Image (cartoon, rainbow, N blue to C red; front, side):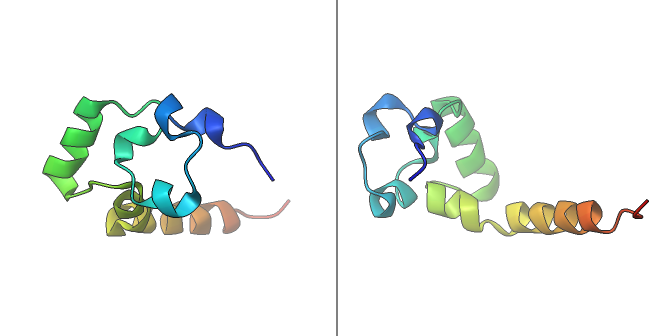
Length: 74
């Protein structure tokens, strides 16, 4: 299995995936408490699950997936 601990703050490295999904978004390495507060204020995102299922994040992923796969082959 892949080591995802490099993507998490130290205190969350040993958590189970089920617990991580409901962890605060600032459990992700590089996301500060201020970033988490901004996400909460702007988009209502409080947890990693909220971030992953946010409609704007999903739309952005879909747009870039379509863009990457609609480039002319050649």
